[in-house]
Length: 433
Ligand code: URA
Image (cartoon, rainbow, N blue to C red; front, side):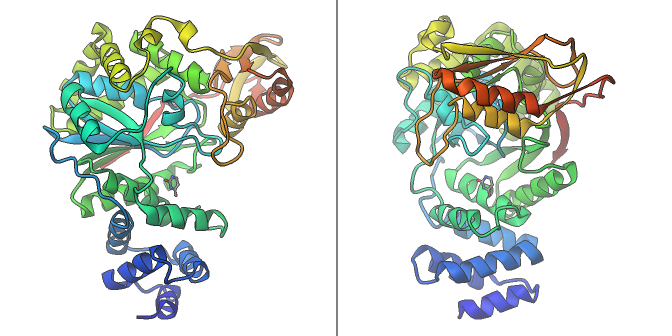
């Protein structure tokens, strides 16, 4: 078999066989096939796509390029959740405790922030002492004991994706539905959960800017899961405005705790309840209506907050954060962002809001660089809200005063105010199963 012939075949828009896909992935991972030939193949996939069979096989080969986690010793159906990345998206840390409090088993591996988007692991690490690395046995024991564990992805998970992603990043081949779908799902298949809820974000802060593209991506990921024997459902959610009021690690953990105490923003609370209910259905606990009632009750009774506390202690964190904000310090330099005119906020460029938060120190600007857990933004007004000139629409937090000016300008530029009130959509935009 020759890589050259495989490139020509895909260039002619013919489907590749399982043997050919195996040849490409194993040859690339072990160094027999050079970057330039894989780049050419990736570009033909960008233009000619892949059918369902090819995509299912490609994804499994990528997953099998490293360690496949075996979660079969967890009692019950293990449920994972994945978001395609957003701004202010702290849903995992609300949903996982809600699901665990209702009898679900959440075994989740999460990532760090990427570009303008935040990452669950960074947010968790703003809790003093909390560990996000764990041996597989301890991970399984924790899920069996308290119903949830959220840890970082291990180095050996889907190494083919790591290599392909780095190549895509520099060859103009990131932005392709089959390549994004196989990348995300290879890590999910390797992580071992039987059921997966996908949160596909849509809008100015997301990879997918239109509902149509998001739906296609969701369908491709659901098909890959099905082809590999997993139960998968995708929820399309709005990322044309940041989620909740807080952006930035410690600020978002404060918002998670407030939400689990029943004092969270309405959009965030509702989105989390809906997704948690879908996870209970995927975990074969009960039907959707019963599930929604149960998660609402887990929120109202404090049972979900208690689960978050159990997870924090199990992973070595200081559980006093649940009742003492001062253990989650935030930036000592602050700046109020003032509305520039009267009217309504009609749009928030959500990617730019995320960038403003990174500029304050909440995200990395270089690979493996430091982050300031206390940096970020609290939004007092969002899309649809009426504002008067000189109202405070947001407060910026930083540990370094010199970062405030640039972030303030970026945030102001991200906000559009107009005289006519906009229609504001629901945060749940669709479901693909
Ligand atoms: N997230 C991933 O893991 N892979 C992609 O290709 C895009 C987003």
